[in-house]
Length: 114
Image (cartoon, rainbow, N blue to C red):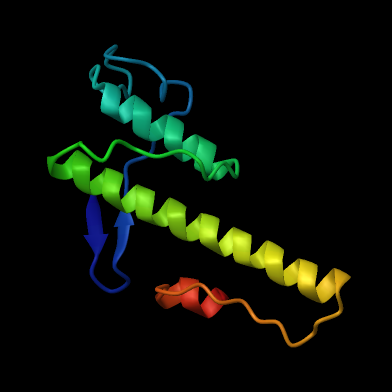
């Protein structure tokens, strides 16, 4: 992994989707660490619009930070989706054109979107 200092974008190595689910076979595997499988499963669910997934809060170290950050992003996405649904219902069905989205605590691109 490397960080591009001009854009602060994290560049990850390419992953072959065919081996992403393997465990310890030396072909882009996770060397048998079940936490990596758990992260992948949660990310795939999130990608498919399932905001109910959570990673374990009891993980420590780097995996703990990944879990905490993932869970925070998931909660923010769920709140944003819920707020979008509320505003769409009020504007589209009830004709209340003055409604605006509000998701407390969001910053950066999240805030710009809202």
